[in-house]
Length: 59
Length: 186
Image (cartoon, rainbow over the protein chains, first blue to last red):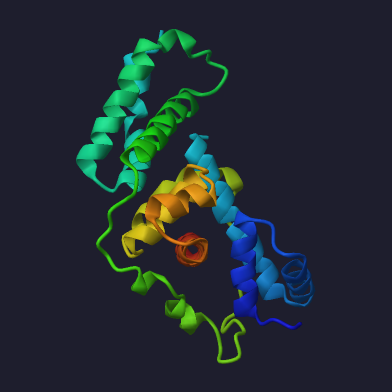
């Protein structure tokens, strides 16, 4: 059940491309709830994604 | 009517965009020229509702995707081996898979600023990224293509694709961080 930060970081990236399986989603939520570093990491990947998308639309 | 001076001012942006995807200056210049010609021909359809850049970018994006589909599979001679695992990020994690260093919040950048600086950071960062990794990222995040199409174009499995995108995001995150850290010190 428990995952470490490295596994969490892979799931966070994967989740940006497609919905995670219910099991992975749950494991990730539990990890994020406990881990401030991974919450921060997740936010940063979202910022990178948003800035790439905006650049892609010429905004 | 679009003023030629306004059009010209957008050329660097378009060229960066095309270069990120094509990674070939001549091919990039060619497609930018086609984009500008198409824009001039259909200038009346530019409503002014969106910015000129957004309009031009949508034409360029359409042309890039069209080219990608017509050209078919990308022939890359670099081996996938170096790109198929994420061991180059070992240093970020401890033995038991926890972050070595605390991840600090990015307090500096405004979101609007980030998109403006995206190309600048991407250009520097993608120079050290393997080709396929950078291409997968551009196709996915800049051009917004679906995973299936990216896999097909790069001739890789969905698992490979997921690793490439992970690697690209990890690298870019670090590049953005260096950028913001530098700004905070300045």
